[in-house]
Structures are given as structure tokens and as C-alpha cells.
Image (cartoon, rainbow, N blue to C red):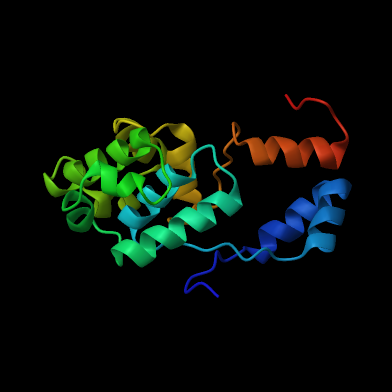
Length: 174
């Protein structure tokens, strides 16, 4: 079991359940979902970059290889190896380069990763999206699953759209 699990706001869950019968029924049927949280923001950033446009199972496999091969995911450790070594864990060369660039930005002081938690959502999104390979989805995943911001909805997340289409039996969600 992961060290840190996303903590749900029971008041918010009750509110959502009372406002939407279909969503309330799904919440009741599925129950709490244990989602790992990465309290270290750099680790969370790297995990979010790796997770871009791959399945949860692929992420699990690649992340396991990375943590076994590298130990701690730190800017220092990432900068100490080549992009080709990162790619061997199962990520694309493009992602490997993006991760190395992010690590370099942190080490050079151009991105104060620890300061992000003190910023508002828009400022976090702006700072993270300034990095190559980081878009709104990646910034939102970090805000949700590392900073545990309760009011972030990643509208362009494919899993959210699939879930809503299944729940409400619609072909598209607008």
C-alpha cells in the first residue's frame, strides 16, 4: 500500500451525491478510491510527465522500474544520468528530455518547486506550463494528486470524459 493516500472530503462527497443521483449512486457503488499521493513535488512532477497519455497499468510498470532503478526521484539524480538511461525505463526520448529539463530548471533555481504549494492554482499552472512537456493536464494532475487541491477539475482528462459518458450514457460530453 502506498505511503500517502488522497484524503477525501466527506462533506464534499455528500454534497455531490445529494446534487446528482447518477453520480451519487456511482459514488456509493464504487466507494472510496485509494489514489497514491506524492508529497514531494518534484517526484509528483516527474510522475505526471511519465503518466501523460499512457494507461494506468503502463504508468505502474514504468514507475516501478524508475523507482527501483533510481531510488529517490530527485533533480540531482535525474541530472546525473543521461536521457538515454531514462528512456530505458520505458518512456519516450521526448519525455526523458522533458524530465531532464525540468530537473535542470529546479537545480538552476529557475523553478522553485517547493514554492508552488504557496501559490494559487492559476500561478501554479502558469509556472508549470512554462516547462517544456508540461501542459495544463500535467499541472492539474500535480495540483490534484500532490497538492490535494479540492477544486481542480481536469476537463480535458480522457478518463473523466469516459467515465461521464458511461455514467450518463452520452456519446460526447460538453
